[in-house]
Length: 188
Ligand SMILES: Cc1cc2nc3c(=O)[nH]c(=O)nc-3n(C[C@H](O)[C@H](O)[C@H](O)COP(=O)(O)O)c2cc1C
Image (cartoon, rainbow, N blue to C red; front, side, top):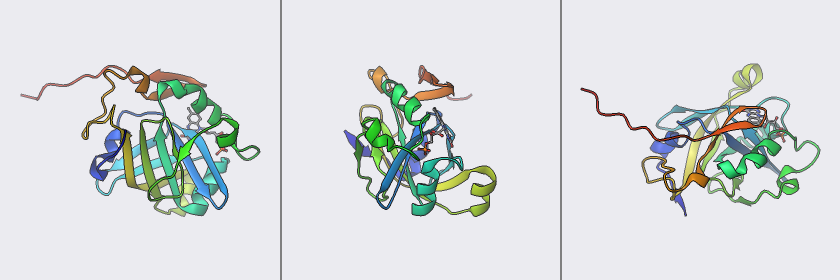
């Protein structure tokens, strides 16, 4: 079940460094690409740093719409992540080609990618120099969702749902799956 995540806790969906799918839409065009370089930047309002290279088709949709979605794919979606991270939609619509099902987001036009375990709807805080010089987009999370199998309202937990673990890209289609949970003792 997809449940709303409190915005001030949205950073917790990305704190463990998962590979993501970044989607965007503008006019009649929509797209999805793989993105590992997505990280939390602030608690409240929640902001993210997202690197989107200038030569991607997704970049144009993000700049035109001022919006994007970040979805967290599961281990079973490694082939899809690699596929949408290797091919560009400049020539062929990847959502169609790879049969990617989507759901309409609540606050942005960018689609949520089905089968994922968490989703962050984001609005771009425009900064021309950051985009031009570093391919960097600062975005504000305006809505966040997670699969209630792995989100207890406070934290991600993958115990009992190994198939819902997230991916962590190493290089060239090699990933790690989210590892063991380690809980530190209170200091002192
Ligand atoms: C696992 C993975 C992670 C990636 N991370 C990023 C990233 O953080 N930023 C980026 O600009 N491209 C990243 N890429 C490359 C884009 O996904 C790739 O250029 C894609 O083809 C762009 O698609 P588009 O032209 O249809 O937008 C990644 C690729 C893979 C496979």
